[in-house]
Amino acid sequence: MMPTPIDDLSLLRTEIAAVAARLVARDGADYASAKRKAALQVLGERADSANLLPDNAQIEAAVRDYQALFLADSQPARLLALRTAALQVMDALAEFSPYITGAVLNGTAGEHDDIELQLFADSAKEVQLYLLNRNVTIDISETPHFKGARFDPVETVSFLWHGEGVHAELYEKHDLRGALKARADGRPQRADAAALRSRMTSCATTPTPLQDLT
Picture (tube, rainbow, N blue to C red):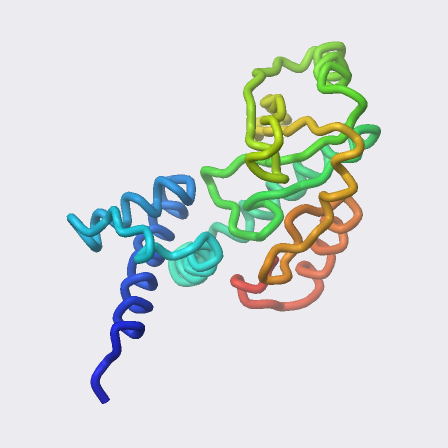
């Protein structure tokens, strides 16, 4: 049977996702830049054809596959260290209803990743003062709101916690109402400390292939 254009498109996306996964896992590239660079390598002049690009879910799956094949001797330990540090900082910031998100939550975190949190407080200044009063040096930036472009960006504080980088997005308390929706693939977008702790316990007691440690 001759391959159809749909088959060819699927193969192209798979190839781009595999190249992007290597850039993410080895070089610490973010998904957007990894996707662009991978498309240039695979497609050349056609790299600006958006319909040829894999979505983030496909790249995430490719990262899991890459880590299972090439980083199985180091990535699980790195993930455990990051999740352990994340629990510590979440416990310290418990009054701001911390939730973890990103690669540390989904299980693909590696040597280049930091801890990504979302905090919910009456005001961003409340969190900033809390950290400054405890002699934590912070950098302040902005991050797009998780609800989309219709909402203003939120302030983000970045700091070191026992040598690990932490980026905490600062939301208002009412934003928490829309924070617990699952992703389209059913995986959680964020988790509180209890959920992360439960996940770590489950992974520690049940022998599981690397790609399922999420």
